[in-house]
Image (cartoon, rainbow, N blue to C red; front, side, top):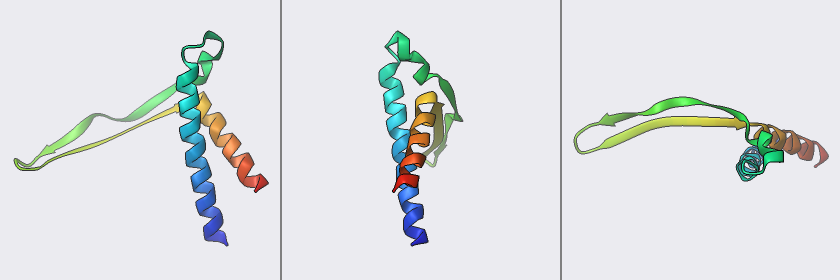
Length: 83
């Protein structure tokens, strides 16, 4: 039962982050809701590239945390407690 709860929590958190970020991007053009898209980006910029001649591998990671994604995480945690 514990593993099942962990996976449900993980899926809910990922859904909250993705949907919150999506809603933040939609609200960016609306003056009254533009604060939802306020946040910070961090990661590996620019991406690191390993060129081996016949194979090119690019490593990169960028995370943007916005107010809307934080609200999405809080809602996901509330839904998880309710389930």
